[in-house]
Image 1: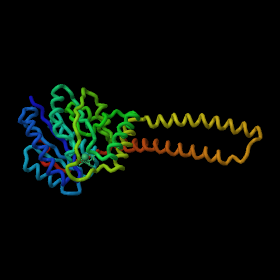
Image 2: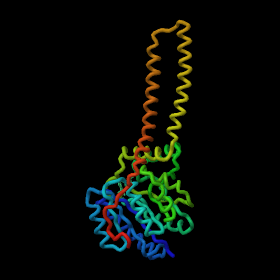
Image 3: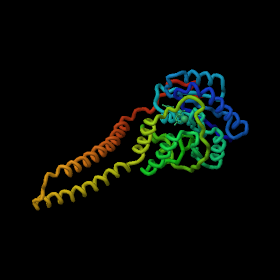
Image 4: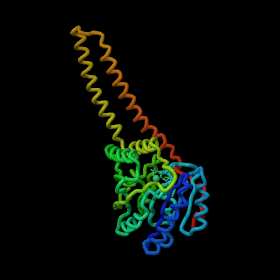
Length: 318
Ligand code: UDP
Ligand code: MG
């Protein structure tokens, strides 16, 4: 039996690029069906992430015209990771395998063939990994590279140069469903599910149209989220820092008492100020990091839904 494949595509304000890439996706799925790699019931599932432009109208239109396309629309913008999760959880009930891909055509669609082959070869997770980053700007390339290194250094297990282009089997998704966190960082969480996995390498192109939604600020916050959702190493580092500073302070206290007893105390303004500055700096940063974790706990305890599906282009059960 050929597996039913769902290609899950999150879309946010993508009216320029959607008409171009939807055709590419459709041709791909038709190819895969005709060469017998996937079942004819395979579909492309667009997730409209509360777009402000005509993206949802375009998706609805596309779905009317094609038998290989479906769409769901979230009640508001929830961000790339949540939109992806919504799509994956939706697809899980219909598909044997899902492949998530961005709708801007940056990721090489031909890697899908290899991903499906790898699945047929026994892998439950197939990571799409960028072989090079020539198409990205120097700035994006260096920040992204630094990001992966930093993440792994701080103890979150991410696959180097892998974004959110990956194949997941329904088996993996069923297990992943019980990962209930609202601080979603899929590429760090999926490796935690386990199962047999492998990588497929591809070249990443420039966006076909439109602009990236990941500004420097958004990337930084994704990196920070990734680290604080997956690892408590920063807290450990702070604790270690605290111990070191405490030892130094202890030595400092002895030193000042001894010098005071020896009657050598002069107006030690500079040293006092330096120590004060150092300690208050360390304390504030530490409080900030710990606060970040408390913030995360606060968000997790609410257990709010991660997404709400407002509309579908098809009936729920068919
Ligand atoms: N996206 C989304 N919700 C958002 C932002 C982005 O669903 O709030 C989608 C977007 O439509 C695209 C994918 O996530 O399909 C990746 O976004 P983008 O291409 O802007 O990021 P980059 O490739 O520059 O990292
Ligand atoms: Mg992109």
